[in-house]
Length: 74
Image 1 (cartoon, rainbow, N blue to C red):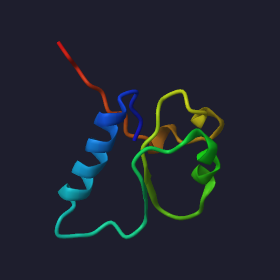
Image 2 (cartoon, rainbow, N blue to C red):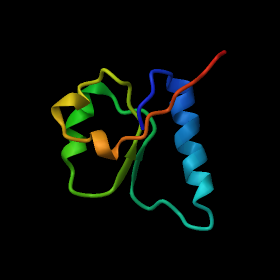
Image 3 (cartoon, rainbow, N blue to C red):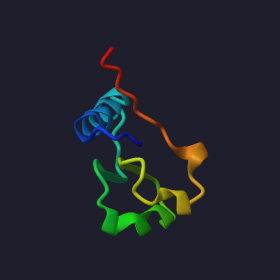
Image 4 (tube, rainbow, N blue to C red):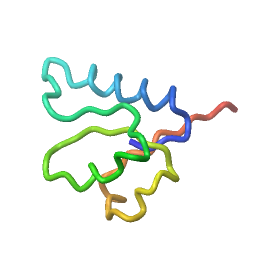
């Protein structure tokens, strides 16, 4: 998931986890990925990761696998 609002990003990921009830997410879950750990996006296992839009993910071909979280204050 990608959002420029860190608080919204963490909440969206936690909401997703609660929406899949009665199932449980048993894989990697990183609510906000630090820039220094960007290489984890190449991992060959399922993950749910939150990150900011300009954090370097353009070097990975993930556009079809990303959920963008938008916040409308209007």
